[in-house]
Amino acid sequence: MEFGLDRIYRLLDYLDKPQEKLSVIHVAGTNGKGSVCAYMTSVLLQAGYKVGRFNSPHLIAPRDSVQINGNAVDAELFENASNFVTTVSNNNNVGASSFEILVGAALWLFVKEQETHGLDFVMLEVGLGGSLDATNVFTSPVMTVITSIGMDHMGVLGNTIEEIACAKAGIMKKGCPVVIAPQAEVKAEKTLINCACALEISCVVMVPGIAAVDTVTHRADGGDRLTTGQRIHLQHNPKDRTKGTALPSIDVDYMVALHGDYQRENSATAVMALEWLTHLGVIKLTKESLLKGMANTRWPGRLDWVNTDSLSTDSTDKLSFPKLLVDGAHNPPACLELRRYVNQTLHHHQLRRTIWIIGVTTGKSLNDMLPTLVQNDDVILTVPFSQPEGMPWIHCVDPVALAQHADYAENQKEALPQVSLQDALVSVSSLYRPETDLVVLCGSLYLVADLYRLIKADYL
Image (cartoon, rainbow, N blue to C red; front, top):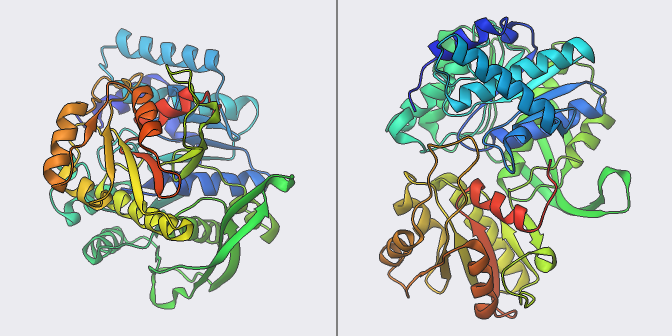
């Protein structure tokens, strides 16, 4: 793909500049940006606001990238919008990429919704990077948020953490407040703060180490379904962690249903952004709306436990393992967080071995990902994933090549390449020992999507 903003600006000009008509909260980062968008959307909806949301990549189908009030846009409406924007691009020789068409269609749909039914805010996730991403077309977003930054997409964004952070900071705009999530890399935090100071904009810098008070079981959505999650305590005194703002101190307990230590910092970043918007008078938010919105947030494909009784395979035999852990971890920082959660799960259930089903996009840092995930006694099954719709540039690593790499990297017994995900599930069924084993599928959200299709999960 050829990156740059010329094509998207030309395309949006022909669409009557929809980016100038929306109140956008723009979110960039290596990991956590989708979760932050999900948390903030859930709370804003709970508070009575009408909210559009754009996330990429899509999970099941391209239209699930574009949501209005918590639901993916209608299939026919999305197709018509995409066809219209494609025609505009073709008729005017714009040459827009598939992602630029998607962004154009999303913004056009949001404006149409705003004109017909009203739309208060749009939560917008960056596609790749920030500076040159097709979503970076807003001169005055309501707020920008930068989530955790790590080493990913080095060939495009830069080969150092500072270069990558600088690319992400490209969504910051003069006069628009920015929340900076806790950063594992001090150099990333310093770079982001310097970028904010150069623009003379107000920023809040979150402190690493948000505390989870305990694990809790609560009733989601006010119904009968019990959900296990985390009760989190956010205590933030911004006196020494703010630039150009007088945000009051925050001291709040809330619950989230999403798993993983990293959701403490993702959720806290969302809460901080919402509290700041409230302080600025942009939104009105009650404590009840905040607590309900956070507790009811869902974000498929991230540390998601999937029951296997509904899995469809080519075998008529029932799978021997009752459930598996599904996660879209596809870069070293995300793999580190997944491994941490796997360790906690193994310890809690007194298990000893992990069976990994792994599929990876080409260009990923396998030398960093695989050693982070896999331990010596583990078993690896490598699989392909389906070609994502509308993303011709995405390719999966061949399972045989991935297995050879895993075998070499881990110096362990041979990894097992599989022809398909269905074959892998059947193979796991023959390997699985209930008294010792945990089954995990990871490496790519595109692989996660394939699994959801097998269980016919309706995440749209």
